[in-house]
Image 1: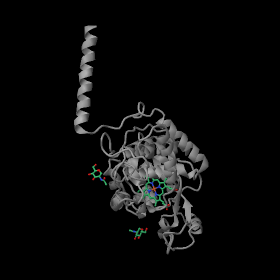
Image 2: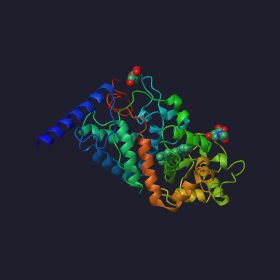
Image 3: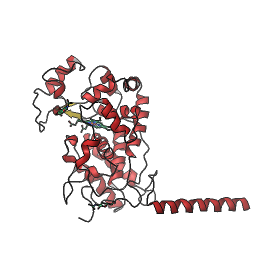
Length: 328
Ligand code: HEM
Ligand SMILES: *[C@@H]1O[C@H](CO)[C@@H](O)[C@H](O)[C@H]1NC(C)=O
Ligand SMILES: *[C@@H]1O[C@H](CO)[C@@H](O)[C@H](O)[C@H]1NC(C)=O
């Protein structure tokens, strides 16, 4: 009894000290089931909305995965990506790097469902993270456990996007260093690029490899097929033609991407370089031969990405509408 009491009070003191430390640093960490008390159905609501949207527009699931990359890679997982140009803020989506991003309006469908149940409680940043992980499941990928408690930025980083998000034709060493700088190792980077197992690439990002001459690292027959999809070297950025990332299982997040790379059917230069660069190629081979291994690495990597430098505690805010900062 007495020992229990002592253990109890020392636990209590420990708890008190942790709370005080948290209070003084003004910062807390992400945690599993952050909304258990404040909005117990939050994760289930997001999941149900993602399922519903997927059934109406399958591509939404693809978009949620790309959103996580573009939001978290740039500075912080803080939904800065979702801000529209208004009130002195320039939207990050105006960057050339955001070309082709779609389905933003459906983020608000998810947010509205949450606002109805728990007003001003669930952040847009957590919607970005959880919709991506639920989108992965819709596309046949693994279920990933994710922490929550991210808060929303009050600013966009439109002017520095290109310092974080690599271009389609950057060198592998630059790509790896960009990911490394936010704590994502080589193996995890290779796994994340596996997201290019789904979705589409517009011709503007491929034509350099087709015209005037075909990139020798591209399978010649496949190049002919791609030329059919992108019949002209015209790089008018508004051109709507595109090719699917993975012709065989275009809507399945699986290791077909790596098999395609090994048979020289990567669409972007960065994709194809994963298979030729000696730093990354061993991982490509492993992932191509084992979907379970790819899934494990992809899960680990998506969690790393989703936890990049979040705003927590009293930082940032909980936006009411994901498109605008509050008080406007
Ligand atoms: C070196 C890093 C990366 C580069 C250079 C890159 C570049 C691109 C480009 C150029 C497109 C095509 C856009 C278009 O023409 O419409 C694209 C699409 C896409 N990217 Fe990436 N990406 C990278 C990493 C990632 C990562 C880490 C993820 C997620 C984990 C991701 C997810 C996607 C998805 C899902 C699409 C298809 C979007 C759709 O069909 O709507 N990408 N990416
Ligand atoms: C955003 O918040 C930071 C502090 O976190 C503050 O310095 C800055 O002025 C705020 N910006 C806007 C546009 O409210
Ligand atoms: C990369 O592609 C862009 C067009 O998207 C082009 O302007 C640029 O010159 C290319 N860079 C290299 C190194 O080929």
